[in-house]
Length: 245
Image (tube, rainbow, N blue to C red):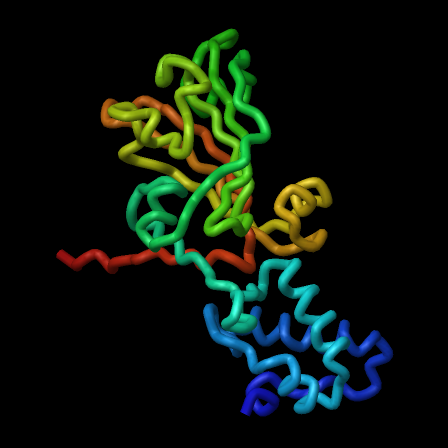
């Protein structure tokens, strides 16, 4: 039964009932007691099981829908939001990742501009002071759900103009796209500004990734910083033990 899996509301909690129920469901989703794409029981059944009003249940579900942890499908009910599995064994763009999973990617541009390289960018990309770079900042979506913030810098010599990038940076880079990357990972909490852009609660957990990409000639062509939602992504890496001798 649903209650046996998810548990009951805690005794002695003075928070509003809808908050208690929302928190209970959130924990069940975060701990994968409720799995991606799993259907929740109808609101009337949840109300009866937890001795709550349907208004209380609906308010709790609304909060999780707004947080993108649940989705409502017309005529089908309420479901746990699907998660994206990112495999770091292969070099691929966000657009390629989403399309390979049958999901519809799109971006909302925050900025797309030409600029003078910063000292940090110059060091990462092997550029001289005063060199021209193109900077791209955007929100990445899959099936209309925000997934990540992304800020990328590439040498101006790699693209004809900032407008050359439409959906996929790697497609625009063509023969200059990375064939080798170095990545650094760091657990973070989204800032108020980042959370507002992604429309998620403040201080939501995420993963910050810095990627430095090198083309076939070994030249740095990409410095990208991405902030992925912790509730929407699973990160997977395949590791092999080298053979002895």
